[in-house]
Length: 308
Image 1 (cartoon, rainbow, N blue to C red):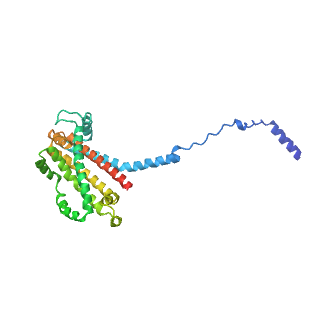
Image 2: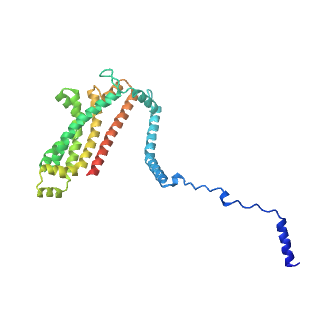
């Protein structure tokens, strides 16, 4: 069979086979959808994920610590004898009822928890303010002049270790009233950290600064405002932060003994009524308020530290 015959047969086979459908035109093809990038894969998404991870790592330990504390508290409550110590749930319910009306007033010996907190804060504010008004300038003088430092050293060493409550009878004897006696206890207890920290901050000012001030013949006021205060300010604020913690610790004990109003009086009154749940609530209130006061002063100290 010749090559021409084979080509004719192949051509006839192709003609007899069903024709394939033509391809659709290019414009008839469906358009491809653009590829969507997941939001977490974007730069903002990755930054958000990293921030969530940091928050999770930072909060994991405190959350576990609180959970362990509540579990231990519940176990002690369950295992304690009758009358048992109120557990977390019972204390929370008592706190909810207590703070439903925190500012009721049925007389001087029956006031809401809000009034008692405000009374304690007022006493702390007045006593602490007096201590700051006297202690900080005294600390600057002690740190600035060596002779005054030598004079004050034995007095501070003798009086600073005295228990705050040991000063209460002196206050009652001198002032004859419980309110100024409570302020006196706060004052005398919180003044020492401010004196010592302020004096230490002033004493650590580099001598070169003072030599330059002497060469320039600066007045003592300019030495104080331009050199001593900016250099010693972080130490001063540290003393203030420590003093507010001491003042808040002392007021509760002082109010237990003097009575009248305040958190200390309220705790003692609830103990006389055998209301242990309210005593536990008072403990948490004292801790939370003290933490807020300390953290507020800590933020203030950081701000001034950056400014200097």
